[in-house]
Length: 76
Image (cartoon, rainbow, N blue to C red; front, top):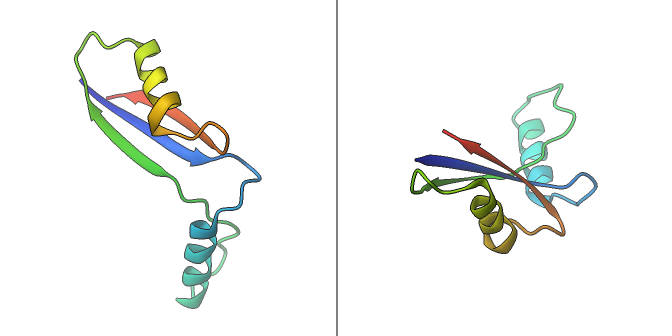
């Protein structure tokens, strides 16, 4: 089974990569972009019987930094 884990910075956490992308977009002449936040997508191929609890534990222990990041698990 395919699983996607979407990881993003929590609101209020400085996002230097997002700022760099925002400035680059402005430099390319794109207007109307008010803010950019950059996250990451992690795709896992796991056994069909992998529970939500196990996926959550993977996220908490390795895939996301709970102090500064949020995550969302999506079964594909």
